[in-house]
Amino acid sequence: MKYFHHPHPFQLESGKLLPEITIAYSTYGKLNAEKSNVVWICHALTANSDVAEWWPGVVGNNHVIDPERYFIVCANILGSCYGTTGPLSINPLNDEPYYHQFPFITIRDMVNAHILLRKKLGIEKIFLLMGGSMGGYQAMEWCLMECDIIERLFLLATSAAESAWGIATHTAQRLGIEADSTWQEAVANAGAKGLKVARAIGMLTYRNYNIMVQKQSDHDAAKVDDFTASSYINYQGDKLVQRFNAYSYWMLTKSMDSHNIARGRSNDTRSILRTIHQPTLIIGISSDILCPLVEQQFIADNIAGSTLKVIDSEYGHDGFMVENEQISLHLEAWLKIP
Picture 1 (cartoon, rainbow, N blue to C red):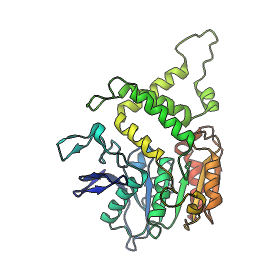
Picture 2 (picture 1 turned 90 degrees about the vertical axis):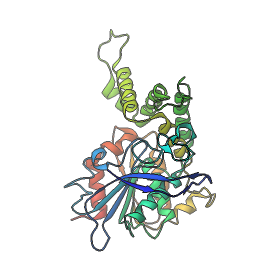
Picture 3 (picture 1 turned 60 degrees about the vertical axis):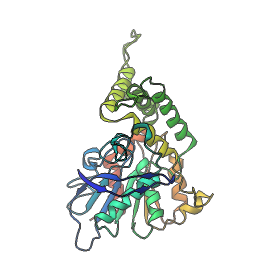
Picture 4 (picture 1 turned 30 degrees about the vertical axis):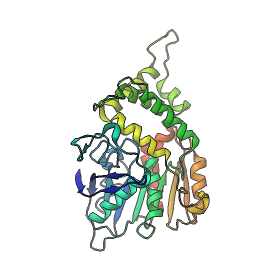
């Protein structure tokens, strides 16, 4: 992981300023002489910049996004807790962590931070910009904000605007965090129990009925407590609490709610999508209940020359992180890699 420190005020879409920002990022491979081999990957909600670690089978040696072929960049998003400026960072104006004072940020603010890093790295063109879920939100916004920089676009399990279903889910998750009696305390682990609740709610939308019944059912009819499904949800909640932070989770779900490519541009999402001229590959997951296939179909219907592929998977929204072999086959064929 590398760090880029921008020691100047960073303007947010809200009009507020961050006095300075630091961006944590990872790169793989080398930029070629023509500067024509950049693949930039935008990550989802609780991921980090180490894309080769969390997307094995797609990124890495001898995979479709191969550092022997491409210069691969992934930057941790603004507001996260993996090295980029966020609620746990020190506010240089008072030498104390931001915590609840961290300002509201949007997807566009995240993309503006990516653009700062792009310029710092001397990247003039992005051969392929790709992202799944919240990463797709960033990729679409970036394509609209720097249309002449992006050459190809790859979107997975994502939408052109956050849906009412997504906003309702995020609101329920934030209510879980806010109900934690420690949430208002100015300490790094405030809201930890609430974060576990938020993750539990999230898991019900990342997966679905079929995969939960298939993987987490008990086969002892006499059982009345300590069910496998309960243990699974508790385990997933504990695991996130150990590696993430309630401040960032609360903030980033608000950022996701802000996602609407038509905001401030037009009242018509279709017309905005039609301005995207880049060749675009779109993948949807058949069993996704968080960002269902209808959302990807809508994008494909309105981006001229786009290609929509549907992956039949039991894993729901998490299929974009699990079905690496199918994703790679579609992406390789679309890129026409020999």
